[in-house]
Length: 170
Image (cartoon, rainbow, N blue to C red; front, side, top):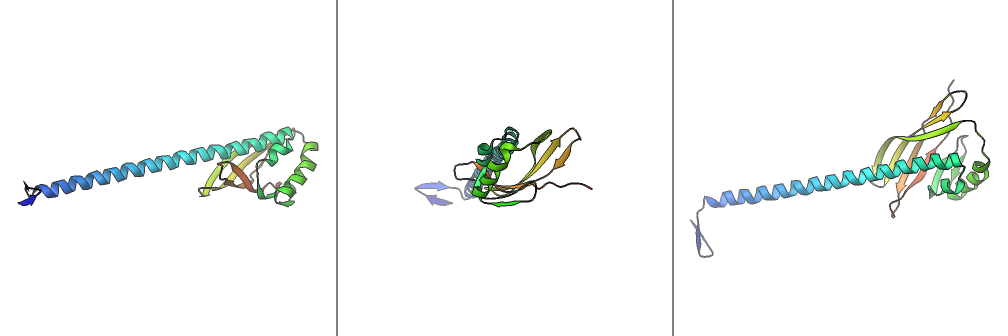
């Protein structure tokens, strides 16, 4: 027997109490880990939704020939390679090119964009594979540009790197 605070406690009770305390601590840690994992999954889901929204906005602004809406999607230090292979370094260069070309662009048909795959390189950096399908009278062709997107401090995702070069088969 051990005497504690003027009470007599059987020694065989101490291991059971310790085991119960340890089990409760383990259960609390597991509950906290599950809650953290669920919060991370929820945050990732929200990030994927935001990234898909950016890609949908690329499609919408291209179709509408909305240069300013398109440019709002870019990080100031972005690197963009155009459909014809011209490298544009920084938002100023991307803006000058886009404002000169997009409003007067002529194409027959339509294009759709969808996120095919997203891989988070860090919680605030994502590699995004996009599926572009060009629908025209001659038939559909497909492009698969990669984007690197970064999440800003305000939660917005912006295009940081894009390779939009057309690849022709044959």
